[in-house]
Length: 381
Image 1 (tube, rainbow, N blue to C red):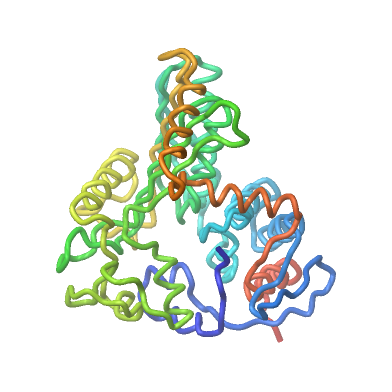
Image 2: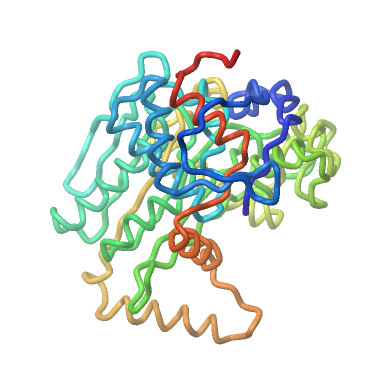
C-alpha cells in the first residue's frame, strides 16, 4: 500500500492537537535536489526511489535536524523497513520534519530499574522508535545471554510513537524467541458509542519463529477499528471512511474524517471485544510501563508513551517449537484458498521491492526528505 500525499494534507493540521502533533504544517514543497536515484511513476504523486537511497537520505535528513549518526541511522532503518512493506508508519513521519526533531531536553534512553529477568527503560524523551528497539534488544539479551525463559522490558517517557510494532517483534523472533509488544498512545479512541475518547489506537504485535521459512510469523494490529493515519489519509484524499469505524463529536457514526478529527473519536474494532483488548493494552503498556496513565493525566499533553515488550525462549518449554509453529501456520493456510496469513502480504511486498531495489514513495514526502537532508529545517524559497 502506498500512502498518497496531496496538498489537501495542509488542511489536516488544524483539526486537533494529536493530528497536529503528527501532521502539523503540511504544505507542498518542490525540491531542487537532483542527485538522488529516483524516477517518476505513472502516478504523478509518487516517485520510485532506491531503498538504499531512501534510507541513506533519511539518515542524513535526521542528522540535519539534530540527531547523532547512530540515532539517525536507526530511526531511518525502522521507517524505511515500514515503507518497504507498505506499512503506513514509514517515511510519512518525515513529511513534517520539525515533528521529528529531538524533544527539548531529550537524551539517551537509560535503564531505570532491573531484576534478573526484567528491565525498565526511561526513554528520556527519546522517540518511541529508539525506546522500542532498545527494549527489544534488552529482552533478547535477558533471554539469550542471561538465560531466562521469559524476559519483560517496559519503556516509558518516550516523546513520540514507535511506528510499526512488527519491526520489534520480528527482531526478537529472528533470534529464535517469541516476541510480544504492546504500546499505548494518546486519547483518540472511544470504548463505546457516545463515550469520550480514553484509549489510544493501542497496537499490539506478536512475532513467532517458524521452521523452513524466510521470515518469522508476525501479527501487528491496532485495537481501534481504523488507524489514525487511515483517518488522516481519508481526509487528505477527500474520501469517506468505511462505515461504523468512527464517531462525530455527538457520538453518532460518521464517515466524514473531518468530523472525527474535530471532537469525534475512532471506534474500537469488534465492539466490546476490541474495547477489552484496548483496555488490556492500556493497563499493560500504560499503567505497567510507568508511562502516562489515563485517569491521572491527559496523555496528549504528558507525552510519555509506553511499551511493554516480552520475550519467551520456547526451547525451555517445549521441543521442536519452530516445527510445530510452522505446522500450525501451514494448516491454517491449507484450510481454504481464501485464507491469508497475517503479515504474509506485506512480507511478499517487501521481498518484491528488495529484489527490485526500489519502492514507491509519495512525491511530497520524498521532496521533504531531500530538502531536509540538504538544508535542514530551512524553508524552501
